Image (cartoon, rainbow, N blue to C red):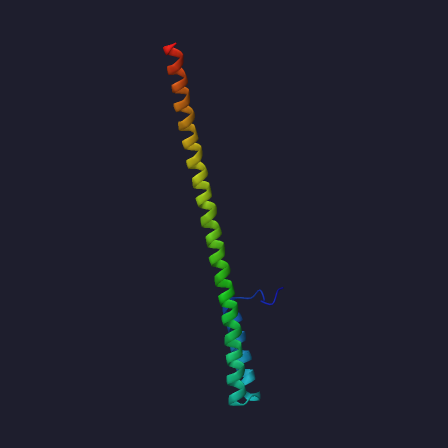
Length: 96
């Protein structure tokens, strides 16, 4: 869904100012207040949803980074174990 136009941030912000001023004349003070509160609630829902998606993405990235680190650590540990086992095997061969 492409509701947001591909224009500069200043033009996008200015369009909100224009729409706001256009609505002032046609609405009573109570209607302006009700519509303003509705728009603020809508904006808060969008902001909250976007922020939570960012948190989830950050957690996913952090988890993936931790998995990469733990895989590398596991590989290093397995290499040390293989080396230690080879040394033990060599020690057993030389004793016999």
